[in-house]
Each structure stands twice: as structure tokens, then as C-alpha cells.
Length: 196
Ligand SMILES: [Mn+2]
Image (cartoon, rainbow, N blue to C red; front, side):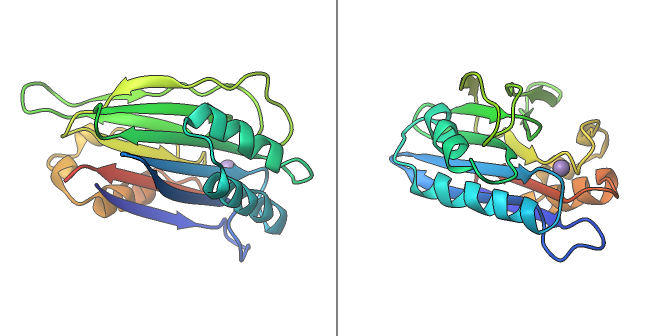
């Protein structure tokens, strides 16, 4: 699988409150994106802590991993966090999210028009408020594309109107999303993954 990332802090800040991390577990790949509350150095501290606890978590499922991150973020400003497990053996994604980090699958096949499937997140803030940790299962075919992004990117994007874009490298897709849909008043991070 190949990934492309586009990210930057809100203008006027040195550090971004958005951060992402990735790790293999068994035959799966886990991807996490965290958006620290607000922006600036304390938001960056929260999302950096989310990366550390995600990478050190011994949990084998996204919901349990998210639980670990939630506990590790106590004492920080807190963050919206989403974790996706890309399971290559079962051609599926398990997704667990807390707060406003979007996870979307672009369903892309030769037989039908592409369409977007938005994955489900729970309300809450890692480190502060979480009532339950749930994960949801989605099919992930060989031609499907995974997109995860912070709310520094508008949720109203639609790449399906851009001819040929879905066939490009994931970095080109991430860069196009960033260029066309970023919001000026927040940190931005968008990660795009494609199977090869
Ligand atoms: Mn944000």
C-alpha cells in the first residue's frame, strides 16, 4: 500500500496540532490521525502524545487502541482521534474514531461509478470525554482508496468530479484535497492510502 500526506499548521503557528502515525500489526496496518484541541504548542503536545501511545499500545484492535490513547491523553488538552486497521487478509478496514477526524473510503471499481463511504466516529474527545469505544467494519477492495483527515479540511469534498484523479498517486490525491478544500483557520492534515 502507498500513502500520501498533505499537512501544515494554521498560519501564525510553528507547530501543527494535527499528527499521524502508522504501524504494522500481524497482517494488518494501523493508521492513526489525531487533531489536538485548538492549535499551537499544546495542541501539538496532545497529538504527539496520541502518536506515542498509539505506537506503544499492545492492543490488537482499533477500539482498544483508542481506549489506550484516551487514557494516555489525560492531563493534555485532548484530541479528536481516529484509528483505522487495514486488514489485508480479509480485505476490510476496522475503524474507531472519537471526535471529528474523518475516515472515508472511496469505492472505486471498474464496474461502477466511484462513491464515498463515510466511516462512523463516536462523539467525544480523547483524554477528556469518551463513553464507549466502538469499531465498525467496512469492505476494502483492491481498487478502493482510504482517506483520513482532520477538520482543517472541509468535509464537503468530492473528488469524483475530477476526471482521472483517482488513478493518480495517493500524494497527488492528498495534495489536491489540500489545495481545493483546506480551511484557513485550522491546522490541516490529510492522509490518502491506495493498495498497489
Ligand atoms: Mn482541527
